[in-house]
Image (cartoon, rainbow, N blue to C red; front, side, top):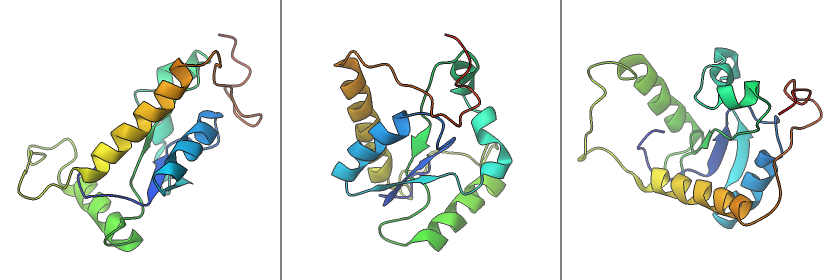
Length: 141
């Protein structure tokens, strides 16, 4: 998650895998946000992320964050910020906390969104399911 302010979108890495996307979309709508897939899915992030061990065992999970469409600056600016972060700071010594430059409002909004989805699940008897096209649908949990 980049500390670059509030976003219009919620980008789902692995969009289309499970009905958690639908639950997220319903909650995101309450924040006046929309769901989008990963514009850089060719990097294989879904298969390299912390949630992937769950998928391999047949358990749907969700990796989502505001990432693509800045409320204040738009899509092109957000793409530049992400590219800059990946090229110059991600997993490098220069990846430091910069309180005078960071805007954490978007990350806070993402946290509230994740809580809302989790709270909704925790207070129901429902277990998320895989979408029909997901390669993980056949895994027995």
